[in-house]
Amino acid sequence: MPFAGLDLHKKEVEAAILPDHGNQPIRHRFPATNEGILAFAKSHLSKQHQVAVEATTNTWALVRLLQPLVHSVHVSNPVATHAIAKSKVKTDKVDALVLAQLLRSGFLPTVWTPDETTSELRRRCTERANLTHDRVRIKNRIHAILHQHLIPLPAGDLFSEANLAWLAKLTLPAFEQSCLARQLFFLDMIDTEITLFNDDLARHAYHSPEVKLLMTIPGVDFPVAETILSTLGDWTRFPDGDHAASYFGLVPSTYQSGDHCYHGPITKKGKGHARWMLVQAAQHLDKHPGPLGASFRRLQKKKNRNMAVVATARKIVTIAWQMLKNNEPYRYADPKTTQAKMSRLRVRATGERRKGGNPKGEPRPASHGSGNPTRAVPALETVYAKEALPPLLPLAPGESKMLAESGTAGYAAQIRRSYRVPKRKAPPSA
Image (cartoon, rainbow, N blue to C red):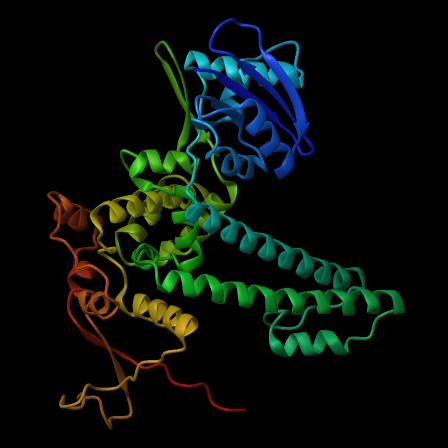
């Protein structure tokens, strides 16, 4: 079977084809365009060819073009390929030939090729991240303008509705005034784009059972859930949650030789944006009353907060993999928070609002008319049933012992039954 290696660049592709007999490669160079790639494939490749190409920005477009025309396309891990085939002489011709030779010998380190649905979700999550980073940069520029002129910040969020009106009326020197007006215009425009983009992501999340399943994890809303799913892709390719966490680069690096073994900082392999989203999701779990919060607080006492945050982010991935495997929502979610999270998603995706209050035929609560109103918090199973989520499975062996040791057994029992909490009183009107 003939093999081909393609060294892909922004404008051109260098190809080295190893025929099924002999070692002399056949070389070609052609434009990195749809027309150039298709013309090369139809002239020089066939259904018998296996093709190797390194992962880069435009790799997946090339893969989609070649897959129907050749036997198979293998996308190599550029970091691992460089480690295997390190050379003093590096040219496009050498790189293309090395890819073809590694593929022929069975030593090509490959990466998983996502399907079209996963690729599209990855592009959506990346675009949302880019928009969010652009908004942060604009806000930082506005802060810098105020700082340069020693203008004290108003109370509260600088970008609240009231403070944005204050910014618009601020008097500055002519040049800075025009800069501030320009940044406020950009901020309004990008806020609108992010809102529209989030609405689109919410509609996708609402109709995805896997996204709604992962949203039951504390700290995980639909953007984080979609990022986890898009990064994992086919989650069944991981034998366990630890391998999934390693794919996110959230496991410690290890250096072992002889009797010495050193565990260092996390590997940071994989998609940095997905790792950042998980770390942000774990930031507030120190206050969660369930096992995740207990684990966070225990690590924070032993190590420090940053290590506890990263370790909790890793735990989120392992829990997510187990939930997907068992098709089971998170067992220790707060019913009130989960209900509010699912309600926000439903309203954002469909505009549907459900009626509150007591169900018809049920008596009013004892607090009615007492001046101290309360609201009902349903049992966790009830919340999951209303959202068409799978039922909770029986506790695994040893899980009751874990709850008792972590001091969360009382919380785990409470969320399995309905209860009432005081309603928040509305602040007095000005």
